[in-house]
Length: 117
Length: 109
Image: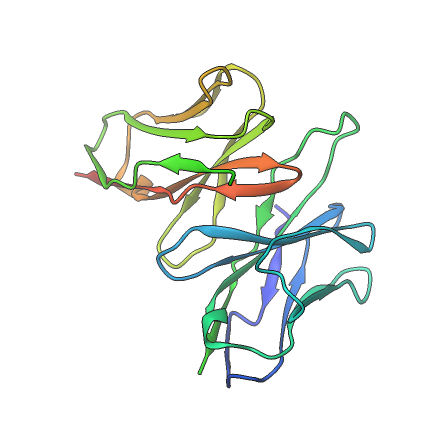
């Protein structure tokens, strides 16, 4: 069964450094997402991406965050200047959409554990 | 603030019993509802999706939706120790998922 893949599985970075998290969505999916989960807390929406542009973003997704689809397969999340509070699991997800417009299930990757020191 | 509420648990059931997990949501506009299972340290894994009122069955799992009451539930029949995990209720709002905090289920032999 096709799956969303994320790299790296664990990233350790010094505060203030830039980090790029990478994702390869399921190949026939058109919608891409990033979520994060701080340890012991809820999964939180960060951003959704469709047709090469951001379709929605949360309050968390401030100017320090950006997303990109640099080629036909990768989808990246960049954090420009990391803060201690950015430490979390970051999940990439993707979904397809039916012609009726209903929201299809989002399938999640295994996540990247980001640790900011 | 759009909310999805779940009892945090733990919900403890004996092996072979039915586990009943409940979820309420605040936004009446929501049309798509999902249950995910999350093992400790792992990613959310899709268990069920439901879009219309009533019951939807898939193997040992049954999802129930009542839009008038803004209520979604998940029943797990013949619970197994391997079902022990946190179950996340998620509501799709404008193509983003709003998650509840999850209910921790413990199935004991």
